[in-house]
Length: 220
Image (tube, rainbow, N blue to C red; front, side):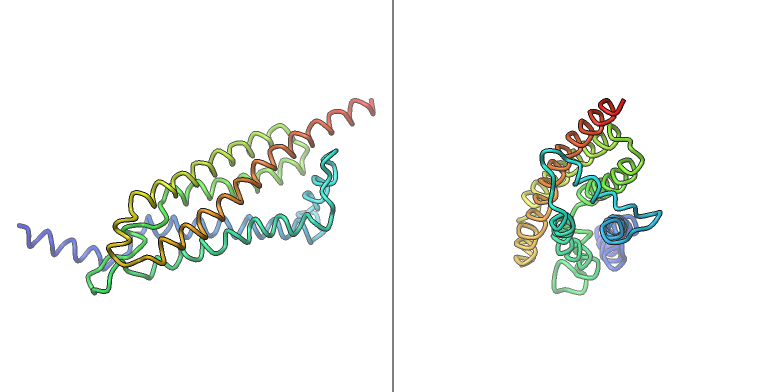
């Protein structure tokens, strides 16, 4: 009985987990889509990309962001997410041991959990929705979605910290010390920067909405 279970377990280790692999790929796709849209909005002038971010940051009185700082700020925040996302993708082809029957790293001990990937994807989508709503002057909804994105990022960061605490022993047993430090340096720091920027965006959006209300009331 035990030998049959062991054989089944060993066989399962040879195959990928579709759901876990898809969650990684979906998160990377969400990140690339958000980054592409932000770059397009910052540097392209078309009907799709209406320079929404430049307009948004230039109307945050009294915290107007200099125009030359807008693109570096957004690109820095998103650029700091690339290292840990690339690290997460590498776990698709790495194993948690030197033996041939070792399981894939993203399956166990999963340095980057599915909850973390899901909540990070939500934060990326919150930026996409934020850009769309600001472009269409739905300022209150934009603030709401940014707050939801902030909550998702808080959950993402806390999940990552707790997950590392729970599985640090397994990673150490497998001699994956570089993974432990990669999570601490790239994942935690990258998410912390994005969370700080998300909170700043909530404050900026509140000022922007107030300024638009005051501007419309003064014009009437």
